[in-house]
Image (cartoon, rainbow, N blue to C red; front, side):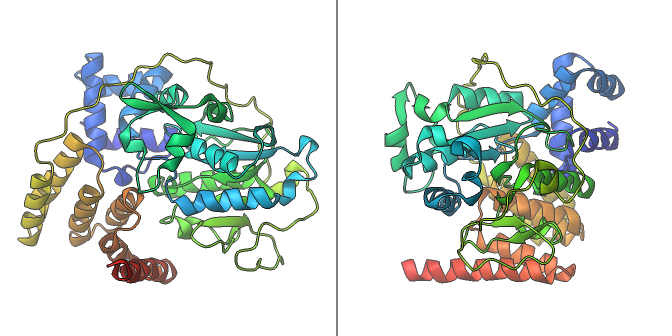
Length: 427
């Protein structure tokens, strides 16, 4: 199989950096779709992909595996609720006083629904805010609109929100209509320069744990889109492992503790005090709210029809011993048998799905083989699943420091040390 052709195609169409999900996983997805279509020739399947949006969507569903849950990084949502309750500065001058929020990519809906629940719990009336949610995966959006969630979507010790906003339905929990009605789902491609063009700008944009999947060119396009969509007074919320990926000429840290939030950068504008809410400024026209020229008008992406047909797959049985292969991979890596160790890690990820340990061990193997670019991408994937993994934080910091990224390395080392101290205090 000529995998580079498929890698180039996915990079061009959805901006995917294949190293972030490993080439083996992409090859597995391509072979699976070829089998489903009865096409033994990779060239024929590539031609089908180029001519069929439906088939591209099917491939995306197998490559993009969302890993999300309600109130992931709880402090982020607490910050959003606190600022909204105090009165978002940009909203006062807007007719109707509507707070506009955006989640992209929204995966299966846990993030935008968490935004809505946080604001409702903070006492914000439903008519005072709207959450738009965008994702490229139609299957994920269908599940989001179905709004029935299993145990994996409720993690951590504090899940009291489930009693307030969900009711039991079969083996899962269905989200109440009061929350569901606040979120509006839309199909969209994040690297599309016309994404959401023609819509009003947003007071807060959540774009977390996605830049790590993009190559440099696609990442630059996404950052330009985020700049265009965010209001001058707005906040951009990122994932904790992505804070160094934003260029300083476009965004500056908001200094809101553990929120990983950014303001738009403005020439000559002073930094806000630590913990301060967005400051009130004169309202600017939409065209002036971005540092790059806005794209020519184009119709906004179509909203999803309600209701969509939903096919929710049955839960797969738990694997007998998913850790055994990774233990063996570590043993092989310790013996210097890197190719065999990598093959075991990739097989584990194919069979059992994404896991922090799987990505971490494969990252160690790539690191040892001096494939530093893929190693960094794999460490970031592991942190996406387990943001408090100290081993991964230290290894990624060490790798980045060796590559000259001293500032991000220091931030990661500081995070790891804080986690170590906090862990000792609890014991």
